[in-house]
Length: 530
Image 1 (spheres, rainbow, N blue to C red):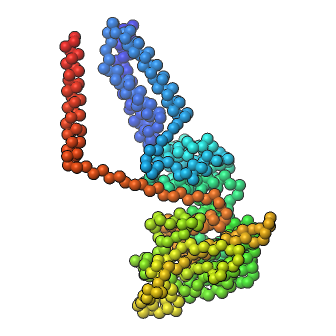
Image 2: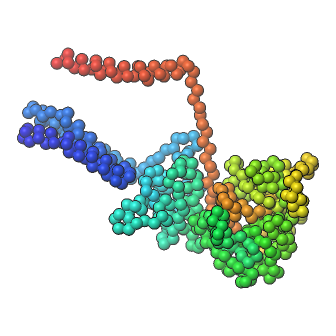
Image 3: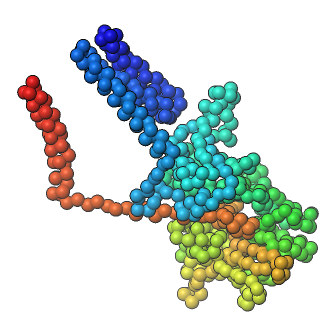
């Protein structure tokens, strides 16, 4: 019996080494350290430590008792592990709660009425697995997982397409929405953007209907398709339409000049930089569209630069309390230094309006090339609520298109006196109601004095977010939320020279010497007792 037990004990280190090799091979092959690899490593180390054990006839009973106690201890640890997995508890002790989801997100997750699955399709397991578990921990209706498309391709004997990699998919029933992720980006820097996209996609997949946005064509308007063509570098509008699609909105085109009617399934209508004026029958169609309780998004350019005067369209907007002035904003206080004063960068946003509340205080600006002032009419028509959205800096003034052409030819620009400098509004939002009682229909309008901010060569974060929030508000997507950025305050630790020396002596001298002489003293005492 002793001999058999001795042979088994001698073979355990080799078995442990084999388990360690298998764990390393599996980790390299799967490109992640999963539970199986971790279990093999722990078991391999335990078995490998058996090489320090010796078998003697008198100690057989001791080893048997040790094995039984070890098995009981491992069983207790396994039971504790199962309890922790079944009832996880997390505490975020950071000052800014940087490892917790926003209060808006927690409220939405706790009030879910449908089951939702969040899947990250990426070649690496972390940090996405740990991040998505935050959502599943807050609601029994949320499940999360990380899928490696390449690993699935090996089992299914197929190659994954590029569209199946580096994206997060949110599903509920037969509906699903997805958005792309950057696998090389810093997770902590992108957590706010990821959280906003996941939550808004979650809200959209549990809705019964997808919002539809129609972009008007037929009058020289800019559309996602018209900017693709041969202009390969001008992709911002296409990417903006892609953002709307990824967040659950359906983008369509409408040739209003031909159709003359706006489809009943349209939730919002978008007019981006028209070059020609609209016919009276088209204006009537837009007025009826607003009467049905829908939204209108208008991006105008100053007349005489890209667009003509458009008296019918501007007169239609004045009916709803919006005055698009036929001038150009010149800003000497905040502008693109690579351009000139005619490309103001707006940094002042209305923090109280849903369209711009997430943009105020972020330190990022909105470039507006050749913008025209958009202000409320005086007086505002009764029953309408009109509010400013965006302002230029306090060093701004207006210029007519004729003056702009003269400056462009001569290259000389003179700044007016302080009395003429002021903030100029460049965007307005309108809310109103047609009818009364049960027949009442609420409508919304957003007008901005520039069409280039989503049609230029680069779609920045502020441009995409402003357009996205405007479309969400106009289409009645009241559940759309904006996750505010987390402010991480740094706490510098300044040590005096005496404190630094004390820490160095303690960590480099005292602790190592205490361990060394403590072990030596313990060994000496044990030998003397024998």
